[in-house]
Image (cartoon, rainbow, N blue to C red):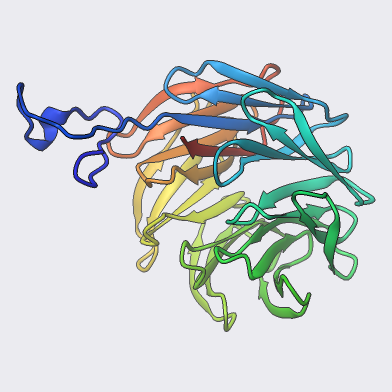
Length: 326
């Protein structure tokens, strides 16, 4: 970080004009960690620069579907097919809390931006909001028989967006439980997320498309076809809202949000038969973390190169990945 400028992963101070002997008042070096979820029932925390495993989170009785850091990076939240979500201390690996109440596999668990609440999506046809500090369920959303694949909070934590095994995503008021919008595809939705300002939502579907929506009105603004491929597994907007990142087959594809033009195609894994299960931006938007059935890779967008890869203890279905900068 130099005068509010963040250097790239390979950047040095000379790149921004500093010479030997220059006087600096403060230089901050940001470390980063990656967390992965795997079908072997484990979640792991890794050093993104070396690929070294820093901690193994063990305690679920079935595959772990998602793993994400808390907003402050101190804790990890996991969701498992054993029907629970768990909160862990990222450094010690200790299980802090278990969220129990679903009657089927929990497919995702996400935390609100203030860290006070957790939202889970489950195969029992419900999403639930929980108090993070007590593990008490404070709100339940029912999906009319369709299982929930994914759920997340809006950036201000006032809304919950859920992707269902039906043909739509649902938007609810987090406090009242009132249904506000539906976002419809022709087949089931794999993933849904908000833009950084909460104005837009994006969905990824088995119908081979990703869609950009105006969250408040439900208006579909853009459809991004996947050129005949079977399905799009995840879709997220960049921190500046200008680019869309999708996971599809063996690639992570970066597109211009408003024109749909492909800006970059990343192939993080050596095996072309490996599907990319998910792809997410780093908070700076300068890197992409992609997961497959064989591991996770962090890719530098500026130089289109792969950095150290994180590999779960057993290479079995690492469904989720997230990046946290300390």
